[in-house]
Image (cartoon, rainbow, N blue to C red; front, side, top):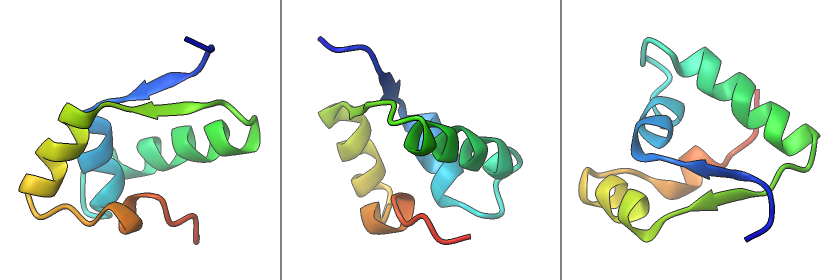
Length: 65
């Protein structure tokens, strides 16, 4: 597997919710990964957990500031 980061359920939930306590931290990590071209991996379990919890995947990966 190439070097990169595995995005877990907690990261996704925090990143997707602007009201979450650590949303700004998750945002900075995401921006860093994008800026530095760090590959991001997402497990099917993390994805299915978030979808089951009414998670909107496109909101997670929108980069607008």
